[in-house]
Amino acid sequence: MSDSHGCKDYMLNAVALESPEWILHLGDRVKDCIDVEYEYPGIPLRSVRGNCDRDSAELDIDEFTLGGKRFFMTHGHLFGVKTGKGRVIATAVNRGADILLFGHTHIPHYSVAEDFSVINPGSIGMGGRSYAVIDLVNGAVSCELKSL
Image 1 (tube, one colour):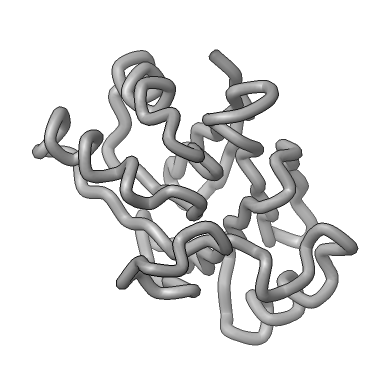
Image 2 (cartoon, rainbow, N blue to C red; image 1 turned 180 degrees about the vertical axis):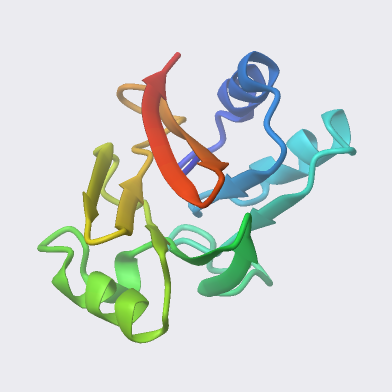
């Protein structure tokens, strides 16, 4: 999920619908994650700082491995994603990522090229109330963009 902008109830609805193993939040109101963690203490949650999270202690970039896949997670504003994905894709590829996650544009996007996945869940808090569900099964990545 990304760009909740204070609409934590939509985040809670998405978690209730999907029952995920992990929750990933791509910034712009990471404080909304506090309520999600409270309601779902058994689900690990990772988040990064967005341009609207200036007072947050979260990192701008998070890199980690889940299901044998290397994730590169950022909000996207520091890479100019509203004018193009080239910089953020190049950075993620150079860092050895298999999956790039970013937000900021509020526009859902999913593409795959040569086993490299680019995912923007859109905005859970504004517009289409969208989010992404990523499945990692036997080394394969699949993603479904959804909306409430």
